[in-house]
Image 1 (tube, rainbow, N blue to C red):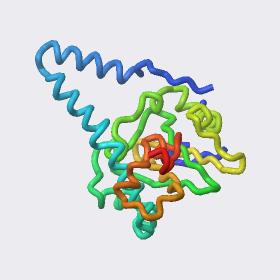
Image 2 (cartoon, rainbow, N blue to C red; image 1 turned 90 degrees about the vertical axis):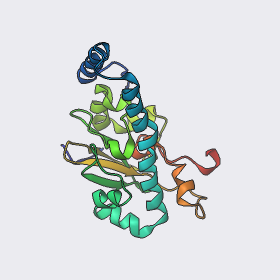
Image 3 (cartoon, one colour; image 1 turned 45 degrees about the vertical axis):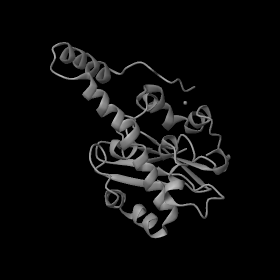
Image 4 (cartoon, rainbow, N blue to C red; image 1 turned 90 degrees about the horizontal axis):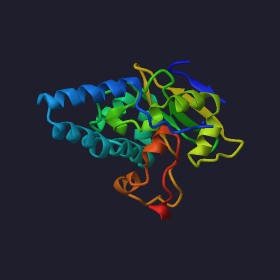
Length: 209
């Protein structure tokens, strides 16, 4: 099922560290105590990915796709190149595919095997994205998962689940909110949330921005 869409979370947000995270934390602690790494430097890197690199980069991509039909078409055909054109490349974002929400179809991204995630576009993955319950239930019961995130879709809306892999990662392009026809790209980007680019949410309504 890797790299394919699945049509069809009792979802618990697991806040426990997975084995890899636990090992990284342990190694960080040891190296810090030995004076080999500076905790402030690590914090700066984390802060950069959380608040500066992403998800602002992804929001800029979505906003441009909303405002520029030619760019949206390019994004559909070759997301990797279109995203790179805006300067967003690098760690875990080398091979991208954009999937567009429509009134008839809602897209949801998961990595069923681990936690493949486009860092250069969305920043650090949220804890729940890496949790076993989300990774398993997003495929089995996507509507239930979305409901637990507060997103209840029309029964007629088709849900497509995309499984990220080490070779290919996905970016959901949420639908553009009504009433934003005259907005600039910068203003539009403010409506794009991280969750809307994973598919567990939608873009913020203008009146709530």
